[in-house]
Amino acid sequence: MPRRHRLTAALLALAVAAGCDTAPPDRPDAPARWADPAATGPSTPARPPATTRSPTASPSPTAAPVSCPDPRPAPDTARELDLSSAGYLGGSGEDSANAVDVTPRCEIVVGGRFTDVRGGVTTTLGRGPGAVLRLDGTGRRLLGVTRLAGTVADLEVRRPGGEIAVATDRGVALLDPTARAVRWQRPGAAERVSVGTAGTVAAVVGGQVKVYDRTGAPLATVRPDGRTVHDVAVDDRHDLVLVGGYRQVNAPPCGTVQIPWLHGYDRSGRLRWRAYDHPAGQLGDRCADSRVERVALGRDGKLYLAGLTDGGNSVFGRSAADLGRDAPNVGADKYAQPFNTGNAQQTYLARFDPASGRQLAGTFLLARIASKGDRGNTITPSAVTADEQGRVYAGGVSAYQIADRDRITLNGRRLAPYAGGDAWVLVLSADLRRRTTWVVLTDGGAGTVRAVAAGSGIAAVAARVDRGPFHRGPGGRSTASGGYLAAWPGLR
Image (tube, rainbow, N blue to C red; front, side, top):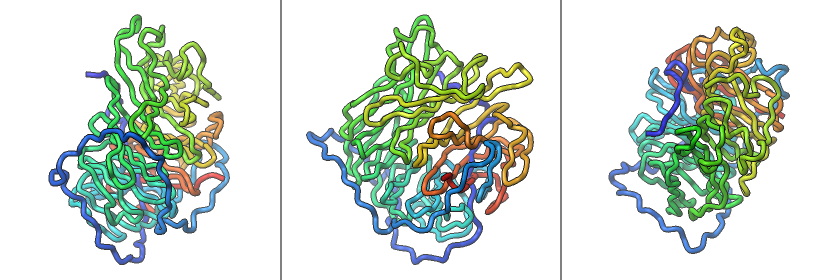
């Protein structure tokens, strides 16, 4: 079995909150229901087509842009943030917010497990614990709740169309922009999903990547032999499906080691480029286990990666194409430079050209213990994205402690001290050199940010709460510490 290094349960949590008021009830369409996967039969592996036509985008008329929040200047310091909403969703501590995105209509869409959500118009497409929630751009007003058969593990909104691709433990589906009807669905427990601008959908299912066209017709199944798949992103502009993870090998003198990999495939499943995935015999002393945890196509059209490394002597310090060259990394201060780390897990963030796989920039991220000589401490990523200007947004869970942890202020109030597992969110300038925002959402509790979204003047994070309390600001809906949402205006 591959070695997997994880934090304790106290270090895990999630963030999602919502609004209070109820939207005027729209007249619900007659929704297509979420079919039982057992009734649909097994999925049929698709042969790659002899010729693959590039998809063509066509915006949905129901997804026309509406009034969006005005972007605001960057905060004065990275440790202060004024949230437009922050609080719990759902009805029990078992509820979880696992995914978040922003629609072309400047609505916030959240996916996860929600047993009891009050407000908005409820559409029932399935009778499981999973749901997709639609909120206004502030996160304060719940517009609609769509019940699904399975818990939502991931989702992404198609831009510009507005359709919502969802991954659940019961299958993959494409919902219409209102989340009231299923455009198509395919069986198979899915962990991650992505949708391109022209409607290509790719999902991680059973360690493979299933690729579908905009109608749900299978295009390809990508099987990276001997490799663990962690995430997928679709770039329809370049006709690519972008996949990342790690492989575990025996690599003397390191012994057993995990090597990250990042691949670009066309829609028929042919490999177009690879990054990292170095031969075991070329690692030298770069023996720290390293993995690609998350990939995402940013609103700026670039590919973003969130990696994890166990210790500072990682291949992420070298070029993704050539271990003989330095990576184009930047490190503004001790929290972005991998020294005095021991075996502490560190986050690595990087930008790539999706068309060629060329690495454009990268940076490390660490927690540090000042009382122990600034010794590096663990911080792990669960989410990454970028806005239209290329600012990088990331989140996850951190041990003691991130920069200025004892002075972090949300909505003008100082947070409670670290209590074992901080759900953190970071915003970096486009050159990765300046932290615009680096705060935690835990206010004496523990959890992890599971998803981040940024665009159209809105930023949002979804988190799982392992132990409350989290910060509660405007628009708080529930006292049950289940899923959590925080939202704030995007940056100019």
